[in-house]
Image 1: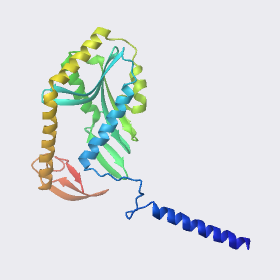
Image 2 (image 1 turned 180 degrees about the vertical axis):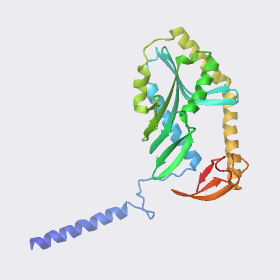
Image 3 (image 1 turned 60 degrees about the horizontal axis):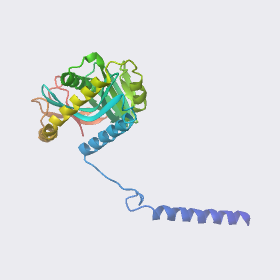
Image 4 (image 1 turned 135 degrees about the vertical axis):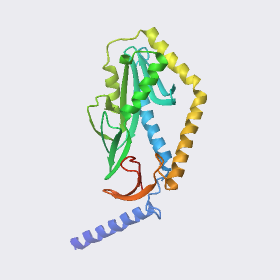
Length: 268
């Protein structure tokens, strides 16, 4: 009799559990409390990058204001147009030029390689070497301030859940290491007056380029539109080749007909 009662109790509990699941799921299998927001790839990547920059800003905001001046989203002129720098910290100990990356998966690269690789869910994605990207930012700071390059400290900060497997790149760090890394610099190379002066110079450059910011964004959008148009037409956007369907280790993809001279690829 006791065994029968236990069996009936278990059945009743199972029915209640199934009813609970059904009441909290819609027809697509998602709970009612979930909100599914889908963005185009470009919008999603932009929002991901923005979240990473906001996290770095939060960390930098903890620096003492008497010793550090934090400037975010800095746009400076270059020989070829403009360059956007995620964060610049002008301090008594030098100028920190910070490039932030919000990635997940495993990140592989070296100091000299043109491209770094992200491995996630069995797929490989390549992106520009952020150290070389930040070198252009350092040159823009040098030009704007006329400060010696030895007093500029470049850093590449990875937010998110990425696992770094890069070689010989001490200036590539996790966001949790950023505050400590900056505070490790103890030798004063600027006076408080010079620190304020350099920060003001960079800030004035930002103001001068406010109109350029809009043109910069429009230019990026226009180049992406042309890029997409060429790809949709079966043309390689990097050279005069055309796109060929190829088979790779991780599935089919489009590659340039001029390979290996041109190594452009596009995942399906």
